[in-house]
Image (cartoon, rainbow, N blue to C red; front, side, top):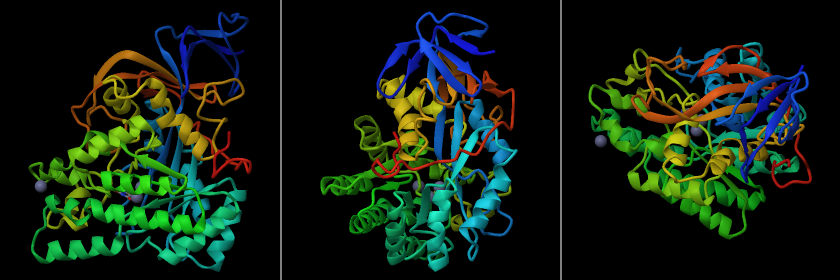
Length: 466
Ligand code: DUC
Ligand code: ZN
Ligand code: ZN
Ligand code: ZN
């Protein structure tokens, strides 16, 4: 028995077409006009867009930040449910090992978190937090295990590696055409500025962004891209947040480098004035990089529009306000860094990008799904509504409206940074590999997520498989 989605408009990064879509098992098996009903279950989707399931390439669904018992408020069970309910059918979570542990052990522990718990499909970026011959030998093992992308850090003392180690890791990753993403902030400068403000008794959330100004990010971006130039590796920049960083990317591209840029909804719709919210509520927005100026925001939107920014993912990393963020009440540097967002990305980008006329729906599909799939070796299994692809389909209703609220969200955290934001458009239903898993913002079939095995296409640049 197949399913026929009847009367919708299929949207890709390039075009939109009125097409019926037949699903059989986990796959899309037929697309065309006026498809025969046969023995199919028919779902009338007229008035809706059929979008490829969204992919969030940057989540920390379940993270222990190394500061004692400060685990994230969400876990794979709750975070993936919030994701899929609103249209995100695949996440690429940041698998982060403890110091001294192997990548293999980290992979096993992330599998344990996700397997049987995830309501969306999943894979991981493997974090490299130290560099030695054992870790080097594991790069190929990861690729062979379907993990084709890696993450490194230039800030956070428990995670960062030296420039020479980044270079060596790049050379190894290049051997297999893997994809590297780096958290770009100059860790020494961050430490210096935190120490300075703390010693001066400047302890409120107002000072958080001042310890990580745009130059701290841009310097790291510039250095990362120069190291990548030396190593001749196409690279990804995660959560790019400033105009200066985007200028550094422009210089690298002008000298011929391939650079992928990710930004996040928080840098597009929120800004730094929120750190001055009363009653310590500025702590809700403490993340790194921090929220930026309106000028940065405008530049990022320009990048989203003109293609300088390639993808939008969330950096979802949720901590409760009560009991977690409040640990830093007397000292902003103790506030756990991160914000929730895996649930709200599609509605935010549709509302503040598409309905404002900044970007087309096709561009939104590229930013949230198709180009992410291509960059991270998920395409064409994911990222497109076409015959042969996984039937991960969002039935997008452009006519609905809503208001984001902590009281009604599915994310398991006691606030949302977007509380009170009005939204237009939402996922009326979500199919994951042919199964309807969500309807009207609620998950109807949970824990159906699978690990997605990724394989690099050696004929394609970087990690792209087309
Ligand atoms: N920044 C955050 O704010 N949280 C998680 C990790 C990161 O880089
Ligand atoms: Zn980061
Ligand atoms: Zn301020
Ligand atoms: Zn992150």
